[in-house]
Image (cartoon, rainbow, N blue to C red; front, side, top):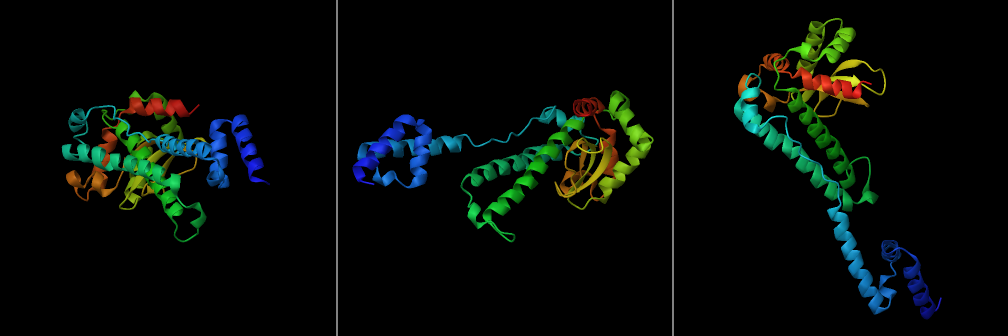
Length: 264
């Protein structure tokens, strides 16, 4: 193809294509250096602008508020955790997962997919840490949401009835939930889960770390954090005592609303 004919076709392409499509086509084809100076300068500016726009449009994970203020948390959650833990567990640990998710989101934009393999690769580690931090963020969101109540399950009539139907009695559920949470590793969770996509049952699920053992399609209703940082400051190694206090502080109204939202 003669150079004049190439320039003519590129100019016609620019007229007929959407501006963004033209820029992407030129950039991907490596033809930028062959464009006429005026057209090349304009296209380079657009590519730079689009790159900035793409970066700015990266998905932003949100650090969600609790249903009570930081000051209110110190009093509401006092039977479960001490005042210092209500602060740094939320504003440092929980927030840290959200920050990591956003850092990973940015890194994924330029990650080298061609180097993926079953041992170590940049893309592989970013994907693994996405799962870890997503689980940590979501479970903490619900953890704070279900706390701050008086522990009366009668304030959640629908979910209480579902628990009794599945486990035989509320006390039987509580015993199984407590045993599940005690059995998690030193970093893990016990989670009352609504198995939405499969059995439609309520299950007490043992999750190690934030994701090992989690059920596909399961909706977390009551997650108790049994990472040691969640309770050691107040209760030391007495995980069972912490779980008892957690159950006694549950806000069954909010739990019931969440159950009704998904158990349709």
